[in-house]
Structure formats: structure tokens, C-alpha cells
Image (cartoon, rainbow, N blue to C red; front, side):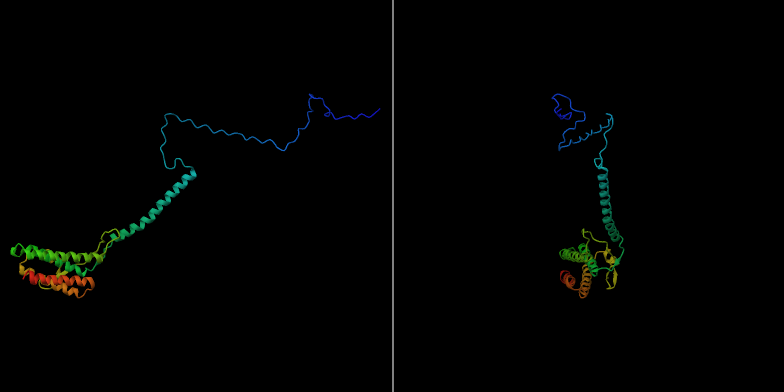
Length: 242
């Protein structure tokens, strides 16, 4: 008998017949991609309609980490401001507690004499109305002398950066009295009796001599200012009230 080749069961299978259960599918280069499960957002908690609205705060919309950083920065700013403010307060307290008593400025006595001469000249008008013009001139010049002396005294004391004047305590100021001896400044500042023309002339002479003596111990602008005041007092006593 001639040999008959038997084909595999899947070969030559007529169309429409069911394939073998274990028939393998052809392999392709693309593998099916896994589909990631979709996440759904959790439902928002139900808030009763009667609930009161929450109050807003600076950290309400911040995450815990951001809120912590915000609080840290606020604390650092507060500490920095305190570190700057404490030394400033210490300096102000030190200035306020300065009880040092300084020696009076040499020009302070001359200021007292100038203001006393101006007051005496103004008061003398009541006793000598005929010399009103001369006395008014003396009062105006001596007031100008006092103001110039005060300006120089304040310049030496100085001022703070904000323009305020520091507390500058000084000792007692003494001035030449009627007999030439030094007396407290309050002695002539508080004089109530008006002077006659002769008494005012003598007082101006003492002021002229005191300013001249002090000018020899000073230098620069101060010496020139005192010399000018001394010359003016000599003119007032020897010319205006002669």
C-alpha cells in the first residue's frame, strides 16, 4: 500500500470549524497597557445651613508647613525689632538719667549781666522819662548782647540728632556785685527797685570791665564777641547816659 502522510489536526482544517482549545495566539511586539484605576475625589462633608461662617485668619488658607514658616518669620521680625529697640531705649534712659553737674559756661555770667542791664534800663524810664530814647537804646542793645551770648552757649552744648537740647545741669553762676565782689546771679536777676541814671551808668561800667577781662582769656569768636560787648557798654555809659 502506498504511504499516506497524515497532517496535524489543525492543518487543512475546513473553514468555519472551531479552533483547538489550546491553539496559541500570534505574538505581537505591542503588549496591552494596564489601565490605571480612576480615583474619585471624596465627597465634601455636608455643612448644616445654620452653621456660622468661619472667621478668616492669616494662616487659614496655608498648609501646615507654610503656616509654620509664616509664624517663624513673624517671630524673627519681632525678635529683630526687639533687638534694635532695647539698645535705643537704653541710650535714651542713660541720657535721661544724666545728673552730671557741669561748670557754668564763662559766657553765662555775661548773659546774666546783659539781661539785668536791659531790665534796669527799661525800668529807669519811669524815673527819668526825659532819657527815654537813650534808655530804650540801652535796653535793646543789652538784650541783643544777651541773645548773642546765649546762642554761643547753646552751640557749645550742642543738640541731639533729632534737634532736641540735652539736659545740661550747671553749677551756680556768680557775677560782679555793686562792690565788685562776686555774688550769685539771682541777686541782680531778682532786683525790684528801679535804678537811677547814675546807678545804671555804674552798672554798665562793671559789665564793660567784666566783659573786657573775660575777653583776654578767650580766643577766636568768643574773644571778639566779648570785646564788642565791652566796647558797646563803654559807649552806653560814657555817651548815651552821660
